[in-house]
Amino acid sequence: MALAWNVPGLPFTLSPSPEAAWTITAAPATVRASAAAHSDIFIDPGTGTQPDAEPLLNAVTLLGVPPSGDFQFSARVSVEFASTYDAGVLLLWVDERHWGKLCFEFSPDGEPMIVSVVARGVADDANAFVVDGRTVWLRVSRLGHAFAYHASLDGRTWQMIRLFAVDGAATSAAIGFEAQSPTGDGCAVTFDDIRFTRERLGDLRDGS
Image 1 (cartoon, rainbow, N blue to C red):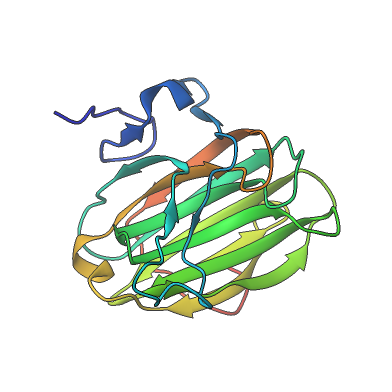
Image 2: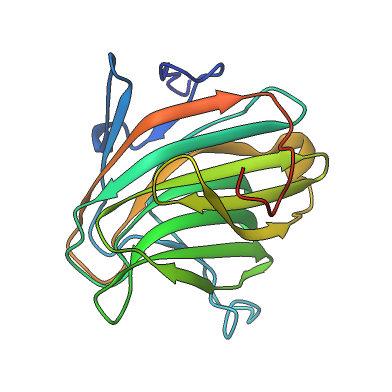
């Protein structure tokens, strides 16, 4: 039976994979992850459709199924960057070929960056903007059958990263946290200021 963990502030339980990679503390609610070496969730769009291609899906995750209806789910993400593509991630998950990542990631130029990746059979990969520091706020919002990704430098003013849909995500998706280190030997990620509201996002592009 899958483990069911409570994260203060979230109205649903989450299951860790693997358990040893995750630590949860309360007051204030904090989730800490230890990314495994050479771990990622990615399906290369150049090779992912080939019959013998296997997606890379070995990053550590902490996921649960949210209540039905619209929501906003956010957290402050801090990453001890060491290697290219190290990242702390808010993850939207349907199955191995359908998912979405909102990442705070270390770029090949050695800069922390907001990156989004959505898989619909294979993955895409889109850079947003560079962050001066090792902490940022990320938010995933559900609006009917669509999802919106936003990022913030202060937890108050938000910048839209993308609006998208994934088959099955509106009714059966899990959400939660992920940590990865595709080219390195692992990294530590901290998620705090964790918030969940069932209020529909008012405006996609006004910074609210």
